[in-house]
Length: 136
Image 1: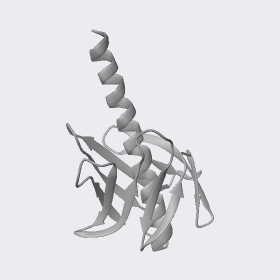
Image 2 (image 1 turned 180 degrees about the vertical axis):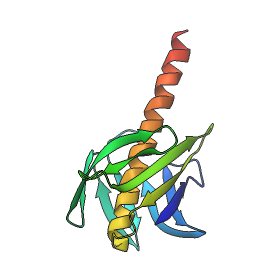
Image 3 (image 1 turned 60 degrees about the vertical axis):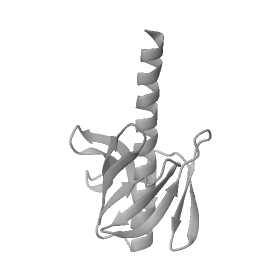
C-alpha cells in the first residue's frame, strides 16, 4: 500500500492519503511524547517505539539509506513499512509504503507509526539546526 502524508494546515495534524482519499489522520502534540491516529472514526494512541508488532510479525525501526528513508524491518530483512519525509519552512510531508499482505487496519496503524517517527526525526533535526544557528 502506498500512501503520502500531508500537513494541510499549520496545526500539528497530518492526513494520510491514498490518492486523493484521506484514510487516516495523525495528530502529534508539540510538547509531549506520543501521538494519535484516527482510522475510520476510531482513535488509536501511538507511543514512541522502535519495535512494531502487527499481524504476528515483529519489525525494528532502521535507517534504510538516504533515498529509501527509514522503516520497520523484520528479522528476515523484509520491510513491513517505510517512508521518507520532506520538510519545508512550515510544513512536513512524506511518502509511505506498507507491506501489501497486512490487513487494512494494521497497514494504516503501521503507516501512522512510520509517519510519526519520521516527523519526530524531522522535528529533532530542525531543532538542532535552529540551536546551531542561535549559537553562532
